[in-house]
Length: 622
Image (cartoon, rainbow, N blue to C red; front, side, top):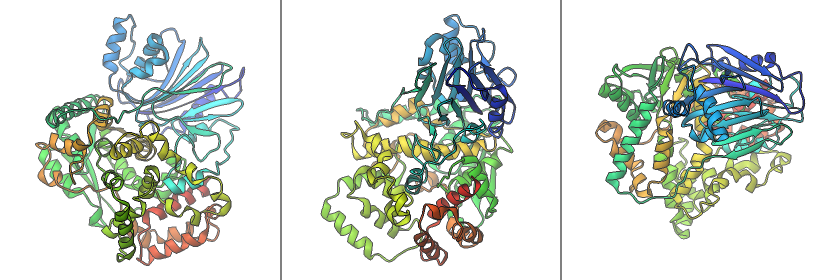
């Protein structure tokens, strides 16, 4: 895993397009690739690379050139089918000089042109400069595991794994995008392709960008997951899931450095570790964290059960309340406000794991591919519910005794019925958003007028285009796969792991497994009240009883307690201060009322307060 960056002059030349600029850009990504920083410059193009050595430690340096030096590439990620592609390319006459998966991209481009990206199976983002044709090709993997940001003005196009690298090019426009503020309050992030910066955008997953001389950049999507169901029996589906999962794990064990796995004690990570234990000659090195403050957020008991079952070399970290310095470190690595508070435990476990291994497998993607979130079952129920039931549920919800616990039944009941009759995209936004139901109350009038409600919910509506005939569950899964997964979950794991030079690999996001799981009938994913049914049944012999039957638990932290105790001064000094930067965009009255209710224990707004805290911290650091 690495950090990549580059800058291309749009005209005949620009003095900023230089090896020195590319080296500065790559150096800003040194945390992603601590094993070396290198650069390439030729005419209108400069490329930079910071390397994390994982495969081919001796000859895999980048930027990497082909035999005659006409092509150069910077690559971040892993190509899991590179050995098969290498053999195919060798049969066609190509000669390889390294053992690196990076070189497959160069020879693949020589053989197949821009279609090489469709042959790659893995997690990747890369920039390839074709000198003879003066062409830049940028590409990103199917699920969006590896990030790529692009800046463009009249003189240059710049790109990087993180925004901070792009702004190492002198004189770029760093103006904010005002429309980002209502979007952030709704989603907890700014939906792609936008960012908080006016001239910076995210290259979407499964997308290429081609820049030719004297032409506008052209983006094209090369893959889309199909959620239309196919007919397949339960037994056959279970067998196929097991086979595909085994293949996905096996492909992710290739490394020339120490390798381990995150183990939460949930179904997904337990399956990954169980399969690893069958394939590796030595005990799997596993890692989990718990919190000293609140046993309700501590999963280490279940992780120990799984570890004992598979005989892993287990390391367990008990984490006290974190210092306020962590907030600033996270903001620095994200380059934008990021509202998901599970970034905190992900950052901590990545930091501690990196002390032992360089690569770790995870269970990320299991809930997304096999319907593990309660909102998926909620979508099925809501769309089949008569209007009079929704009305009655709303009435009951308004009369239920208030429970300040974020996970309480009364809160879930009330939220469900409040959104049950809405459109699919609006309902989803209400269920998983931050301030989606109170934007008009929160935003200053001039900010609220920047976007209509339809424009705000567009991110959840676009994945439904052409999928109107799908079932409620399939539509919910499509929204989740194209928005929450690449915009929240994968952003979180990428920034938090690469902050420490730790590579994470996700077998559940293997291409063949994703395509098979997406097309499974609804009844194979959810049977009555049982979520991820086909996955749990396929691995019933591998899962300990306590883990097979345990309810879903998110990767969370004791935010309610931390804000009322250790982090209260930080909340008051940052978010609630008279000179807080957020007041330029947000009205102080509702924020202070929310904080007061939380601090007095009358409500749990821990997630919302975290989103506001990271926004304030980011504004102060600009």
